[in-house]
Amino acid sequence: MFKRYLSYIEISTKITSIFAFALTISYLFSIGQKININKTLIFFTAMIIFDMTATAVNNYEDTKKNNQVLQFKRHTALFIIIIQLFISIALGIYLAVITDIVVLFLGMLCFLFGILYSFGPVSISSQPLGELFSGLFYGFIIPFILLYINMPENTYLSYSFNFKTLILSVELFPIFTVLLLSIAPFCATANIMLANNICDIEKDVAVRRYTLPYYLGSKALYLFAGLYYFIYISIIILIVIRILSPVCLLSLFSIIPVQKNINRFFKKQEKSVTFILSVKNYLIIMISNSLFIFISGFLQ
Image (cartoon, rainbow, N blue to C red; front, side, top):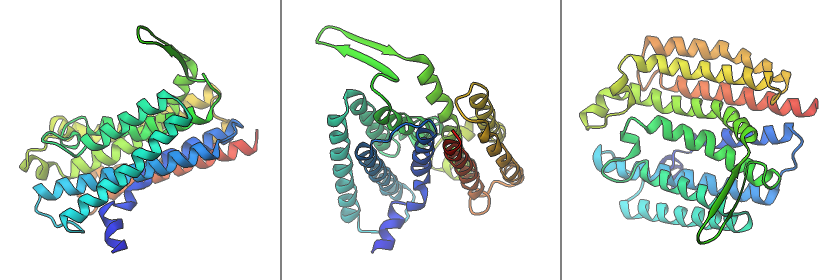
């Protein structure tokens, strides 16, 4: 039963949450920022459980359309979704209570995206914006919330409001820093979905799912490669403007295996053979970046 549960929530796909989290923790360590263990653990737990919930919803909905068999009876599968959703919402609300309304707002966005990604007559996953939204929420929102709950108050923004007025002040350079740090998880995550959609384009069109590769055609492959190159450009920029240590230049060597995988994917786009290359590239990039950022913290 436990194996069926792990299959239902596709535990192997949780890397997009875990490594975005790990990269951000490495950055906090590298700048000497004390980590709030309580808030961080609550966020991590809520994040993982909701990620599992979103995947379960995706599988629950997909089996209605593709005639595949669920790992559990439908009422049991739905019960699992409800329980996980309740736990993640409860943890999210508690985190918002001990932090502030910004975390509540971002959490609500995450929950909305997670449900609409697969649920409803026109789900996000069946539209050409799936790559953008998956990259945004896994690549930017997760790091931002984690940084927000650990950095000193007003590091990124400050606000005041009443029933008539909302005053919001945004600190541009800190936000710019988060955006640059988020490029690696954003692009690497988006490319997992892009590779999946490239491989499934014929099957998707058959069931009226018109994803980004449908509109881009062969140009989707160049977008696939370009997103990886953009990651390496962002690392160089982060080092040049001294957000990251020069030690992180060593992570640029990961482009060698990444490029080999890009070349293989260009030659063949088959779900059972080459889709895994996007996952391998994700791991190569995120592990190398997290590792060298973490190492740079010891050399400060």
